[in-house]
Length: 364
Image (cartoon, rainbow, N blue to C red; front, top):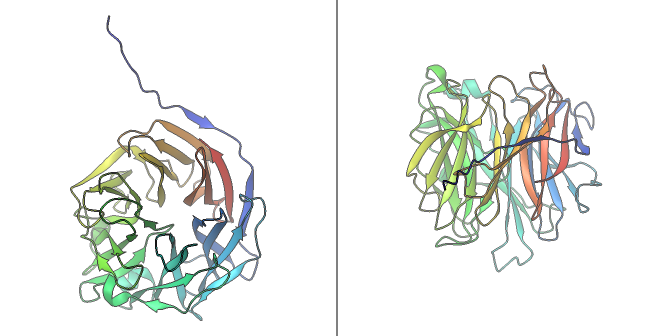
C-alpha cells in the first residue's frame, strides 16, 4: 500500500471587522503611511505610522505618530506625535520591546527611525544624508525619552548613501546564545546609483547590551534586496525576508543565518511568496511557527494575504486573504503583524489607495 500525502494550500477569503486607525486627510496630515505595531507585556497594542503633512511623498514634513489600544483593537487612544523633525522627515518607524533588561522588568519600548535631508533618489546620488536614531519609553508609549543618534554605529556614510530601517517592527531574540539581542533589519544603497536598483542591499544592525552599543550584520549578496523584515528561528537561527527592488523576479528574497543574524548562509527567492515590489512583515508567533503578510500579487499592491508556516518557513501550510479589491492597483500595500494569542494575530495595514491604515484581528 502506498500512502500519498498531498499538502494543499487553501486560500480563505474572509470578511473581518476592520477599524480605521489613521485616516488620511485628518489630524493635520494629508496622508498616513508606513504602519508598524508591537504588543506590550500587558497586551496593549501600540500602532505607529508616518504622518505626512503636505503630500503623500516619502520626503518632506513627516512626523512619527502613534495610537494605543488596550482592548485588542476595539478602541484606540487619541493620536500622539512621537517625533516631530520640524519641516524635515522622520520616517521608517521600527518599534521593538526589550523585555529582557533587568533594569526594566515591565519592558522598555525602543522606536528606531530615520531622518534625512533630501529625497531618496537624491541621497542615492550623494546629495544629502540619512541618519539613524531611537527613542525609548518605559510606560508603553505614554512618554518618550530624548532621541539617541546611533548613525556612527549603524551606517557607513563613506560607502553607503540611501539608508532605511525596516518598515514595521524590529525584534528581540528570546533564546539561544544571543538571548536578549535587539535586531533591526535595514537596507542601504552602495555608491553611485545603478540600473534596476542594483545599488540596494539589505543588512541589519543589532545590540547585545540593551541599546548601549550597536554593530552591523553582513549585507546580503543579492543586489536589489531592500526593505527587510526578520524573525527568530531555533538553534541560533534567524530568517531575513526582503523585497526585490529590481522587480525582475516578483518574489520575496529569503536569507538564513545560523549565528543570530550576523552572517548569512543562504539567500534565495521564495517562489511561494509572490510580491509586486512592496513591503512585507514577518513574525515568529511561537516555536517554529511564523506569520507573514504582504500584498500577494505579481502586478499590483493588492490582495493582502496572511501566510502561516509551522516549520520555520520551509513550507507555508495556510494562506488567508485578508483584503483585496479586483482591479484596484494599490488597494492594500504595507502591513505589520502583532501576536494577539495562540491562534490570532493583529494586522495593521494600508488600505484603499493609502486613504487609511486599518487594524484587523485574524484567526488563523
